[in-house]
Length: 315
Image 1 (cartoon, rainbow, N blue to C red):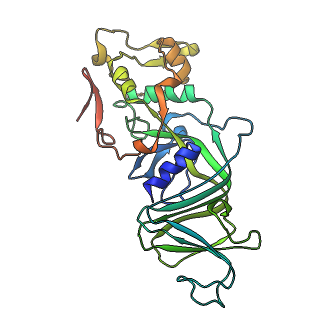
Image 2 (image 1 turned 135 degrees about the vertical axis):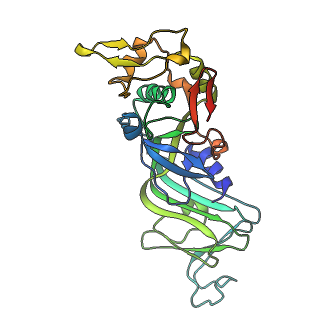
Image 3 (image 1 turned 90 degrees about the vertical axis):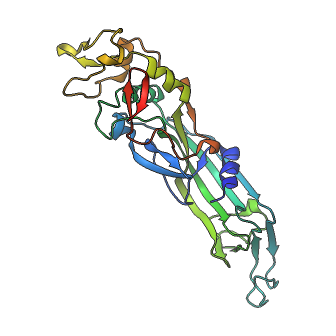
């Protein structure tokens, strides 16, 4: 899929268009981007014990279109008008002919898109704080690594059409339907129309009433991890009567005191855990993933980092 199309989509809608085109992702999915693809590792429920829900109320809809690429052409043809793509006038329907002209060229149109976002972000970031600090103690599947992200916004639309070429020689033909006449401009594109390719080097997303094709992904700012690694955070274990007690108090012991009890588990309440330790965990610790940050993780690799007295080091 065209990197330029992902950038254009983000510029118009502030959401990441997923690839391969047609991929759908759910709210609360946890994973990371690798070569533009979202790799899911689990969910906030399974990994952190936090169930994300959508904010109540309607969101404002947004419609937009875009195109780009060197040599790109969009040409409207009348019924019976022949062309190099449809040389037989008898078979020539009203249509739009697209010549991409270059690898990475694209065209897209989105109608009535809404983006629903999650609640409980404070609880989420507090849970991430816990799962990151005690990642050496928690079982696999409940730890948090620096490159992980979480889906906190999901886009839905009445119609989404997107074509991206991986070849300069690719072409496409778009015809009308019972619901819509053949398009005369990119703004006319609709998922009810028929699209065919004369060259099969085009990725496509062509759907109506679709949700989860584009997302907002939240990550912790890199500088925050450095601060978290320096903080001496202790483990709280619920005592009888529901009162939290500190298992280890020594600040001087630092990370030497980070050994967990034999049955290490999440706190019953992340907010109580943070409040008891007087931790300041704000939503400003996190930021949205942008197209420029959709890079494969290089360091740390999954499961290869553990706390030490000098912070987090690789095994």
